Image 1 (spheres, rainbow, N blue to C red):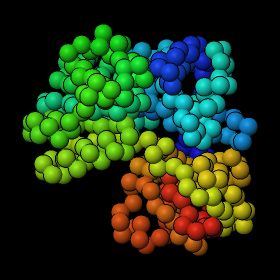
Image 2 (spheres, protein in one colour; image 1 turned 180 degrees about the vertical axis):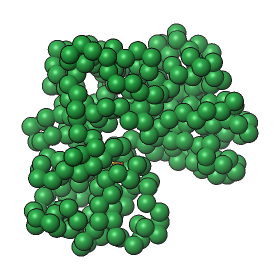
Image 3 (cartoon, protein in one colour; image 1 turned 30 degrees about the horizontal axis):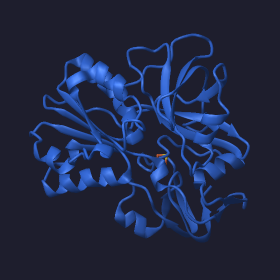
Image 4 (cartoon, rainbow, N blue to C red; image 1 turned 60 degrees about the vertical axis):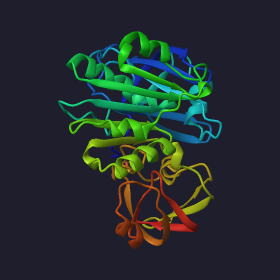
Length: 321
Ligand code: FES
């Protein structure tokens, strides 16, 4: 059985336009009961029956971990959508039933007497919304740095300002207010932790500043979006145990193609190349590794790959499935 198999029916009780490109969906258990508990930074996986097959996308939970009558997620409409965000924006209406996985947390807060410094870029604000509920409730010292292109394009700014006040620092690029991560990290105390979520460039800037300033990796945490690592040339995956051939389209991952095909179940949790759950042996061919889980040695050995983000190098790859 797949670890990420959706096993809960939820009803969409509210859809709001949070910004020109972002919608917030409020979900309640279809039977009206409480939903499973979660911690700040958790995500769920939403199953979407699109015209081109089943798509499973991970979305951070925005709401309070102390309020389990509903979950909230935010979905940004991506122009180069693999189908998931377009489906949520155009096909899902209030009253609809969706299937979701239970929450899982691959981006948890780490207890510290120091400061918790949260750095968000664009839609990367989402995991911090539930984390800040936890931090506020526990009386932790925290600050949010939220960078966006313009106030008109950004979601939840007024809401965050009203709820967290002086904890929030907004960086509006249209006003020249850039988020200087080098300066932020330079002010870190010995017990402070930094968390970053957003575009790859922002994550890399934090990683680079952390390395240059000698900040221990255990105090730097990031969550990356699958969208930043998806896409490439089309190719064919061959399932070695059955001989079945499955085409993988340019904007599709191997995992998505196998799920749409439906002939074999694959375990997965994060769908972002960080947890290692979807690791599959390579029987023939080579992978273009895009994950953050395998070591450089393991990637070079070409014995296995993480099929939620990595692709084939060439037109065909045979996997131990
Ligand atoms: S599902 Fe987590 S690495 Fe692929």
